[in-house]
Amino acid sequence: MRRPSPSAGAEGTCQARSGLPQGGKCPDQQPSETAAVDGTHGAPAARPAGPDSTPLPPAGWTAWLQVLANHRGLRKFWLRVRAGAVLLVLGLSLPFLRQDWFWIGLVVAMAGELIQLWSFANLDKNSAICAHGPYALVRNPMYLGRYFVVAGLLLLYQSPYLILGMTVVYCIYAYNRVRREEALLTGIFQDSYRAYCRQVNRFLPALRPLSGSHVVAWNWRLLRRNNGLYNLLGLLAVFALAGWVVQRPPLWDYPW
Image 1 (cartoon, rainbow, N blue to C red):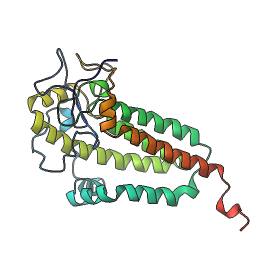
Image 2: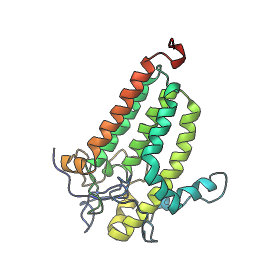
Image 3: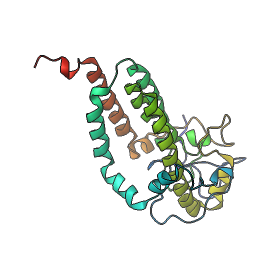
Image 4: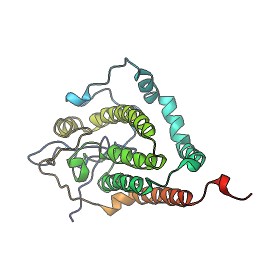
């Protein structure tokens, strides 16, 4: 398996600063989640050209969600408390887990985790446009993988309303974050990144990879540097705990 060249992207993108792979389209972005950086500090105003760069209209019932998603103070606060908040919500919701969809949820979440690991193993943040691995098919594979991880966890509650609500909130979050990251990457890589954006979709994977790129690409050094193994161990630990909980009788059935 050939080693991918260095990368960076609005989630990550593996191509040299000088341009795209020969014959081809344009690569992509991520961890922080999509881009090699979190586009929160000093992102340039420029945006990549293309039909998918048009911002969502700030009207309608999603307007307040977009305001929250783009509020710098709230984003910084969430970065500080997100680990504790997730653990707290998980702990409080354990009694509501259901066994019936446990294996379905595990399969969906692991499929998403494999997409994330593949992205981690190709992302060299902010050093070059990464056009190999999953970034040859879509600009933001990390966000797609994370969606399926969260959806797999929510399947344990057997509530379609949870899945629907999460999908709406996640789409708004991912769209706004990716726009900020793409603006930052455009400022770093200029025309090379704009060309990549014109040829590779933002969220919808293409059936044909970017010309001149390598879809079968995996770099263990990048995987470790992007904390991909810790990410995997964390997800396995969550499902191990959930599996133990759903196998136990409810608390109210114990003879206290």
